[in-house]
Picture (tube, rainbow, N blue to C red):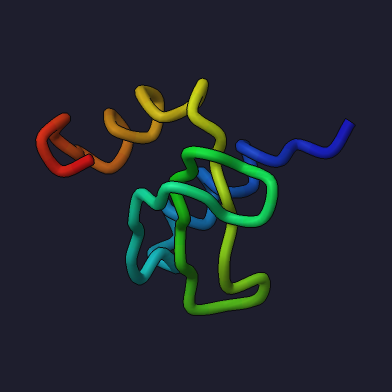
Length: 65
């Protein structure tokens, strides 16, 4: 199994994250948290069941959703 979230977290720790946003729909994922990185792949989507984990990691308040 590909360690999808472990790779994302490592990239965040490495300072590659440039931006993020919550969107209603991205491809077949609804709702979705989009993470934007300075290196390829530039965009990584995160499904709703992982939102709380990333809110804590990125210090996102619920009101920013």
